[in-house]
Image (cartoon, rainbow, N blue to C red; front, side, top):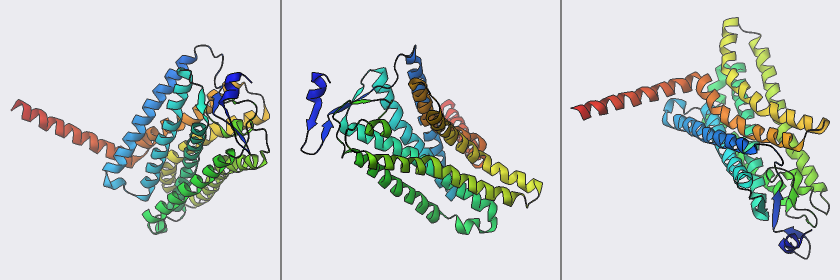
Length: 329
């Protein structure tokens, strides 16, 4: 350990805490700056797309329904999640500011995991909405109400906030008396707690719990709802079946875009060797691409949103025509 790193370490009676961590991130990738430009473009489009979707839902009262409360929540978490991750990744690697203050690292970890978890569980809430709509259509409006959906979303926010805060808080009880190099592109939980030189059993248990609540339980619950939906669809006529299936396509696309890359990357990492750079590029794309595509899918594949966008365009054209007539007169 160099003299600078030794000087950067703060000693306490019970633990050793580094003043800063070093994010090793991407290394020796030719023309990597083009990838950072791509990330910047993705972030701009994500902000524009999600802000547009949030504005459309907010402006049109016809979209003030339980279903679009969930869509609004997804767009908001997508926007916050991308804003938490991408600007910091660009700042760290494009401008080579790889040292990150200990407290900032833990905050970074908390927000990335929290918003990713919220995206995951918002998709579960969407699946519940589709399940009730197709399996119990006559009771849909009495079961899926605004207070019921608000309570489900609020519970997700509070539960995940508490779980992620507890997970990050456990890092604070560790001693870091060796390396401060985090082998990731952000302050990832696993690479950080593995640097500790005291007992990390509790951190490992929490990491497994996080994998279960983020990667395992949500897709299982979604799969079970679609098994029930398939059974319900098999009992109705083909015309009604096609109409009901159309209402599920947007959600199924969001689920596939979000979960397949996460499951694929984690499965490949556990059962075969992936070059660290390839793993990190896959991981960044897994974090950012769903947030980019979600508003596009909901804007283009959902009839209610499309109608609202058409009304907005028509309203703008009418106002522009009126304004030009006033100016010419």
